[in-house]
Image (cartoon, rainbow, N blue to C red; front, side):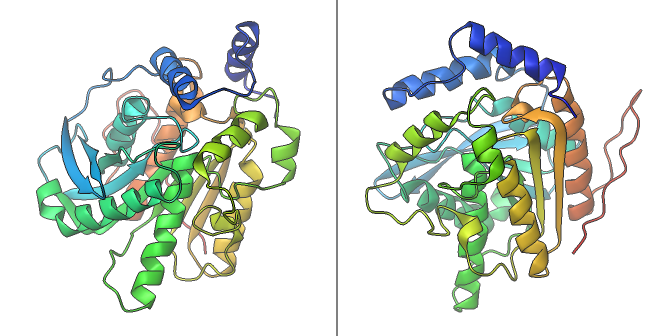
Length: 337
């Protein structure tokens, strides 16, 4: 299928503005660019939601914020939970840049979404962000009643670089349980256009390295700021796809775009999980680019994709579909092993 016409127009706008590619100088430039983009394509605090509140969590040498989103349909009940990690190359992104996505995730999935404002590089390089993710999972699971969630239905989710954190977190929690240490049992992992091999050379990475929103130069600069010199890029905490085995990981929902540089990695990860008996469903969204799910004002299909994701997660956590008027009901896709 060709590039979606709305996505194509968006890329043409970036090119015309001189923002289609390039190596940025510092983290502030990267952060401001993503913030400005988010305000254009998906401004924060615009979608109705059942409730939003911030929770401060103490971590090593500081604090991070957990932002709790309750869906419209049942803000007061005990609900399934979803710990969410935003994208941005581990250098950029914030609670605000992904506010709209978290609101849609809460409303569509019926989960109480808890977005994690993990610390970013270069001020806090690898593995600070992952350590924050571990702290957030442990805290939320250990205080499930305070967050209004069912700890037996707590999943993790992330997009792009946040997908890396979510996938790595699943492995860390599994390994802890294998070693006899207490760790939450994660109910599912939802990965949106995840980066799963930071130094990968898959065909999609090569063929789509320029002109498709997230270019190779930007990713390389992100890695320079995020990964300390001498770090092994094949470390599964950085590149979950590089692990040797994938047994006993949580059921996975992996969503990629046809024109996403990381699409092949997502498909390969789904195959590896399935090969080890992990229930997995992978979907490649036709005509879509990286970050499309965060651009409903620019790419209307983002809304349809979110309804598909919502149906899948509701099926996984045993929630009924939301009431809809004037829209076709989406049939959930059964997870296949």
